[in-house]
Image (cartoon, rainbow, N blue to C red; front, side, top):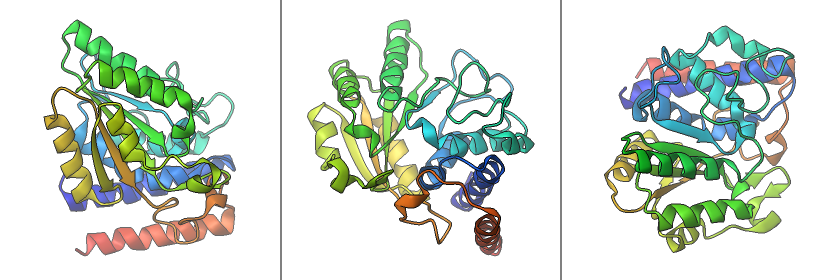
Length: 278
């Protein structure tokens, strides 16, 4: 996909994740919206996956370490063709394949059940190490929240990844600067994030995580980096794409009501129309 096509797809990801959240009347819009461009790039440009064969042995792996932003991942998987887009309206409902956090047993395209913050990156390190031991070429990607990296287990996993020189691992941090209780540097500052990963022998790239040119360049650089894992620190806007949700900690874990949903969808429709005219 070219940049314009990716931008259009990211709008569709944002619309569909909000459809799910509105139907569920619960969930996490802020971090799903901030990471929508990253999800879009991973599944429509970067990763080698096959929706017709979700368990393909040589597929690239993705672990959503910040599992509460599952609506963003589900919307992306649906648009990629792993399951019908119409299933987004079943989000968080009893018997649905789309639970509040990713579940590997039920949902096509999910490589790891996640949601206990800090644990996903450990699973991703294990996958990357397994590929090295088995002589496999697939790459492993994991997306962490910037509040999540306050967890100690993240740094245990980073230590192992750096020590084992896992250059088939790409750690992505969604640095929107907000967590459920407010600004991350007020709650428990993880800054400087880049220097911390460098201390664990990572190649580090700092980018605007809502800019597809920068996202594209970063993932190409990560793939070309040998002898060490890569961490891409993505500066993003929480709630990106919906004016009244942007940079508001209150939208970390609250679904839009009918009026808010209508406004959000109208804004995204206009954004999509503007892109179609470019």
